[in-house]
Length: 484
Ligand SMILES: Cc1cc2nc3c(=O)[nH]c(=O)nc-3n(C[C@H](O)[C@H](O)[C@H](O)COP(=O)(O)OP(=O)(O)OC[C@H]3O[C@@H](n4cnc5c(N)ncnc54)[C@H](O)[C@@H]3O)c2cc1C
Image (cartoon, rainbow, N blue to C red; front, side, top):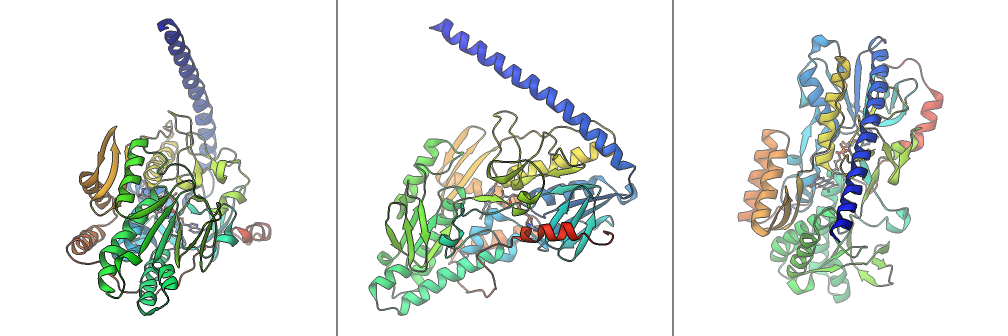
């Protein structure tokens, strides 16, 4: 028996060594290719590094490049985004549920650096022509020497957009405000409604998706609904309120250890949330939702948090894409068939060197890739060997609501209040800007001691995100005079 196990161990060791050798060989080939391409660029006309998307990957890469490339280097770093701010998504639920002011999780991208070689352009990217090294924007064009694609992801409706279009989503600051308003409106309407069935519909709140986003959102919604609104609306009895979390798979929280995931489900149930596992949702309309099993749940507020897919622009590049449409990059985060073209964050499919699996879309990974990209580009500019990207997993943390969280950091598992404090402490330090950190800390303290903010904020927004890719072919084929 022991020999058999030894045999397996030796075979596994040999296989791992084989994978490592193959990987090292591939990296050497990629590195040589990258160096050749970058040398060619160095002698070309311009010196512009263009970064598309001021999200986690884009702002990290920009800040790092600007810090290391002084204006005297002759290089300009141009950051492009359709919004003039960076959105700190991990606290988006807090903005959606009156825990923090929405502006406290936004940071103005123009304030990222005062260096004269940093340029921010507020524009929507409509297309990219990698052969001519041109980016087409809604208000003009940009030529580049190096391009970093960090346009992130959009909500994934798994092809059922028409059936699910009445669901709310949570991806932007506008979505957060729309959700907060919808919850408050539901209470306002229920307050004056005499029909018990309609009251029940108005006071049933559903989140679809048992990943970290769905669970954290449900935890935060519970705090607003049961903690603040149930007290402010005295004609509504707490038993009339129903909170539901639905997940299509048999388990929640993929990517976290199974006992922590089971603990999370247990705690959510103990907090009065109906958790339905193996319950895919087929349709959402104004009256409620229908599950794959045919069950109808009447609800006015249904949030779709069941997954993301890469920015639609990824599908319009002539690049090989893999699972879920993400752009395949090599160990240097380079899109191999295009010169000087890199991708990072949710839009890029990057393999974990240790497991060989594609890394999931999350902010921590996007930040690490943004930093790595800056180093790769700088190394190439300085004719040094670029270091390959290597992901370092630091852990997972999921908040379940007030005083409740689960965390797994460097193999150590923490639950309950200590995990909740860790969660808050960690995200507070990750926020961009002193003013935002201070505002969030004050908002948290105030809502902890008092009630949450239930002011209805007016803001136009749409539940669906802009998908500029439809205009892509026109923009590329029509071309236009000389890019800037
Ligand atoms: C509600 C919510 C909570 C989350 N919580 C966590 C968490 O706690 N921890 C965690 O690790 N991850 C979390 N995530 C995931 C995390 O936000 C993403 O993985 C991360 O933002 C990806 O970074 P990115 O740089 O690839 O894209 P993003 O940060 O999404 O940035 C993409 C940028 O591109 C811009 N853009 C997109 N298309 C265009 C266009 N056509 N033209 C111009 N600009 C464009 C967008 O405006 C955006 O600024 C959460 C996500 C959501 C939605």
